[in-house]
Image (cartoon, rainbow, N blue to C red):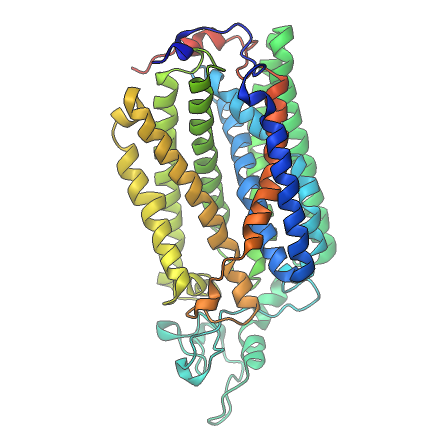
Length: 466
């Protein structure tokens, strides 16, 4: 252990270190990114909309995950995590900024959501050229799921074909999915959508600011009632956060493909948020200890437990992701299979899907399995695994959002054009990420990097795994 990490600090502040100006650098990057994104919007508003939504979800999930992590510590009255909890609180504290970052999405909902302008028809992934003799056969109606000329009987009989005459895409769309979309019309309405979005942001803002204020105020007051208050609100707050996050994901991501549904999708995205924030906690804690900012407050024991949590939640992510895939594949219902046809048909997105399988689960599983990886010299391996998982988090959000752009443009998933990375993806990522991280690092420059006023602070420093 380096000298920097064995020297105890009395204030645990970033003053005089590289961390003190990190928010200025992030703000500069964010400004440049947003300028580039603005230029992209002027060139292609629809492509900008999907690139921006992807970037928005990359960082929103990190902030939501941080809030879940903080609530989890209060729910369990955890003592070991006190010194690393403040880092999560910093990433949680910037959650309100997403209400402002959401405005470009609001302005471009007509480019993102097929139902926004009253079109409640389904969006389908076009089949490969030549398949069934049509380059625009809806995904989820080929192979074992039935072909485009003979839709699966699960939809009922709607007069899909006339004596050897192949129906148009529009006729298939309305005949197969009119009933499903009609049942969602009350939910997929502009007014109700807006009300829900306001509720989400009001709840998230209140929760993040309340928890952060309780923690930072205690640094100076040492008031035990602040800890008790956070613990008292944790059960109801956890339930509310789970509910609002699930419906926000339904509204802003699932409705990109309005005919698709999955009852497990909210849980799958929750697992993603936890893997993302735990990866961030490992990396930031590692960097703060290396720079001496955290003194000896973050020890090998904390990295050991963070590594165990990261390993466990990544296995949970794999379990939920596979469960969603397997149940949809087994049921073979076209309204469900359309999601995976966009991402698994023999084409460029299949390569991305396989990369997520191996680099988000198989490789990290092998790296994090060993106890030695999470302790002493093996912490470099832990940091590498966390960096890999954070990178794959970005890839996963891209995989969740961008195939819908190709589908809405009528691009077949088997064609090379289905996966066409654009410079706007990077510009939006830098823009949203820069603004969010500027808010995070500014908070970090204003408060101790560990909760020195928490009554369990000393116990956390002395914590040892048994």
